[in-house]
Length: 184
Image 1 (cartoon, rainbow, N blue to C red):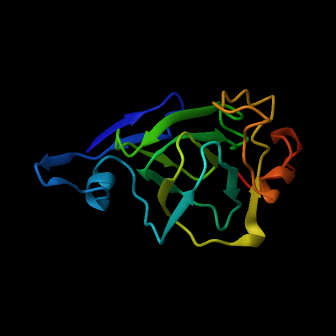
Image 2 (cartoon, rainbow, N blue to C red; image 1 turned 90 degrees about the vertical axis):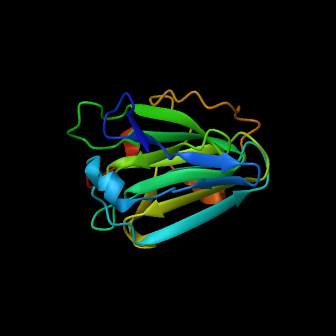
């Protein structure tokens, strides 16, 4: 398992080893022991799986406030996404900055997004499936988000305003500056 730090050191790219032959491949996609040895000591309590039928589906930027904040380990099992993490920790030197990476079934990379980050992704291919582990349960009363197109974040999404496919909930989120208190 290869672990790389991104420009914001708390967000990591994890690439599990894939061993293949004529039949296909085998991969250990999660190992608590190996992650713990790398400094990621998180107990995941729930697995989530999403399917986006169209290219340009954008989900995010989401987070849960404490005490239900979530660490996430995100991977793509079919298709590809641009995965984005925005630092919303007010005391952080990287507050308001973001990192991103392409996660795909082909490159087999995963992104570890710790608590204190808003998370989102946009599909780069139709019929993309994303699976992710979270460290706390879904708590709708603690759910929040940031507008995907907040100009202050300057995220270079590979889809335009006229191409993006959003949920009604995601259309309602405002800019980071309007976020009263994220709890971080």
